[in-house]
Image (cartoon, rainbow, N blue to C red; front, top):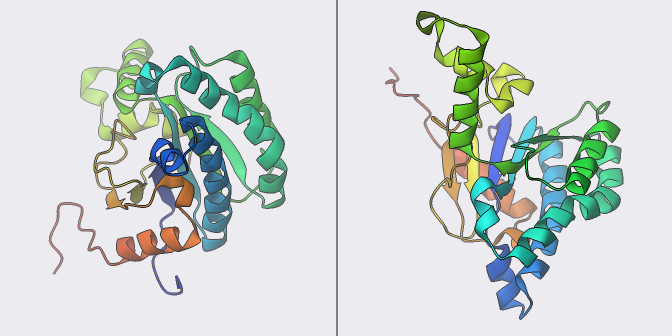
Length: 238
């Protein structure tokens, strides 16, 4: 289906609807989070085949700590399970794994699994699967400002590029830092503090599909909608 359509270099996904999906199945919410991992794997593999360079998935926000303790503990255990089940597969697919977000407060075992996944896939040259873990867009901007102040840069030298260079996405090539397309599943229509600075000119696609049901066809449909958009970045085309 994709063929001649435009493939974004960077796609961001707000993975929403795991709990509702589980409820439909008559299962506890954690069951939906586990099914959501399967959706990450198939989406990452397919995005890589399409030619996407960077896929950022919103795994856990700074606001998600307010969820029930048992659910938070389960979510924090998922990277450990993910490492054992999916990293070997993603390695074969030549996919790299990275993480952005505040490491403070994240369990050591969780960080160890994520760091080991990044280490094991560091030599891969394909798409980067980037987990936004304990991430908040506003907090990221605040931390960037602190870094700029601490570096001694004078106010008249600060530009948009300066801020971009101090955000967590600065670890990626400049052309990939800002997602051209952000997809949110489950029918909700907001960004929820996801890539706040980077999403200024992102194309937004909202789908009613619950995240565990998101598949290759769902990604095709989102990219097809994106390809039909006229991206003018505030200007007017002749």
